Image 1: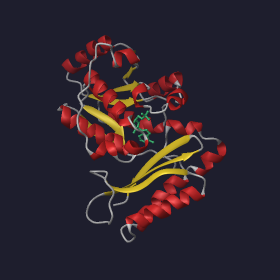
Image 2: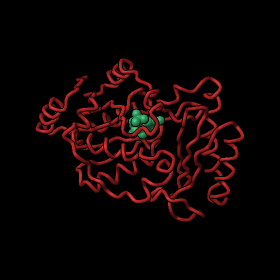
Image 3: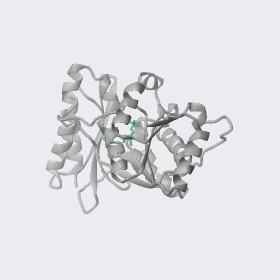
Length: 280
Ligand code: AMP
């Protein structure tokens, strides 16, 4: 696997590949890689893309300094995992190369409700940072395919919109959420759960599955209230449990033809977990 740390080398290398007619598949990550990330690389390889993975802990998307500081960094394990997956290129940019002093601004598109609901309410400024870094990474890598996990459903919905607004020639390939055997969605943050919290964490997926079992007969708001109550009674601090239209991410009050998605964010101690499940 080739490891590139500078924008100039990245340009040279990817331009050569493009000239050879290679399709470039890109999986942006913040490292501390696990099987969820592997699934993106595997999908890129299955599509015969030249697989580019980036590891960049983007400072502008953290709304709490402590979260940025505590974010796990496991570079040598990450490199070993990427090698084992036969990933072709690892891009390890510096903060200065993503945000050079000469960069004056990044286009300020209006994402409407997409950035304002769910995570947008609880992590002010988070999506502004995500949009900044994705705009820069997409500009630098110019991939044919962009692989993103459905675990971060709202994030991939916003990036899909960004690609459309910016007119980028990139196709977003959404990849299913990879879970532990007990249903907990894999996340770099899971490493920070203690043993007791780790035992409790799968309840999030159980509650999502229960919501699905109640669909479409129950009323969405009743499902939400029950789900929150169940999580809180087990010691979770729930930011939200919402049933939304998967296109607009706005809450739905009754099940009809639209595609309904249940989204949850909850804390166990100081670890914040998010997950989601299509209900119909
Ligand atoms: P992160 O390193 O957390 O920024 O995630 C990088 C990419 O991996 C994003 O597109 C995530 O949605 C995706 N990802 C993270 N966890 C999972 C998972 N459990 N299953 C599938 N994709 C995931």
